[in-house]
Length: 135
Image 1 (cartoon, rainbow, N blue to C red):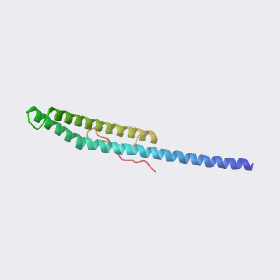
Image 2: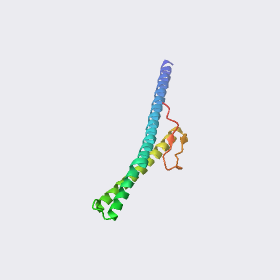
Image 3: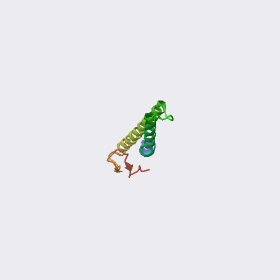
Image 4: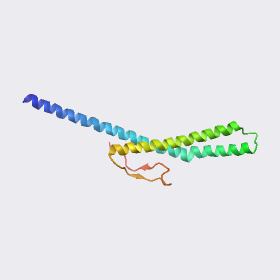
């Protein structure tokens, strides 16, 4: 009987430790997903509001200079600027993808939809987080 009681206590303690391990694992996964959401939104905003428009402006300027026969620009400069613009646009799309993957992972972890606030242009911007993962 004493051995049975001791075994039950050990089983209870093991179950408690397993529950604690799962809670910590879920918290860590939620923190990772929340980081992906915030980082993706930050990177997307950086490319959308700053880097991509500057690269487009540079490309447009070089294209006009090349078309008018300016000595200051060559065809290679135009190619380099369009390559930079395309790389920035690709990174902007990757940031949006990372945001969406993080949001999907977070929704999976919490078992449903989470509260978000829509971006200003109907969805092309990442949504901002209103709720955070509980510790």
